[in-house]
Length: 92
Image (tube, one colour):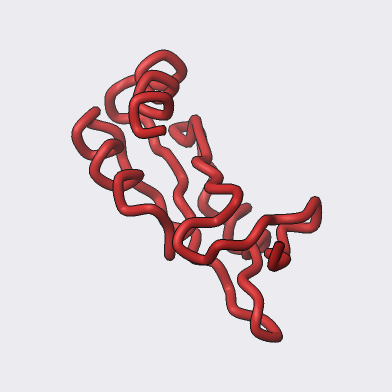
């Protein structure tokens, strides 16, 4: 998996581009972005009614001309749940 998203980052972005991650998330996301000289942008997941959800309002604020990618971990690691089309994690 790490090799796959490393190649995607290298091919689809340039050094200095911003990549959004949504912690808590698989730690190699952070290491890979840094190693490839991209900028990590954080959009933390929200805990609502015992489930992790995407914070779309904050996500919209994070995006600018240098933002080129969002790494979506689905099923979520370490949460172990799957995001539905609304960005809400459902336990599978």
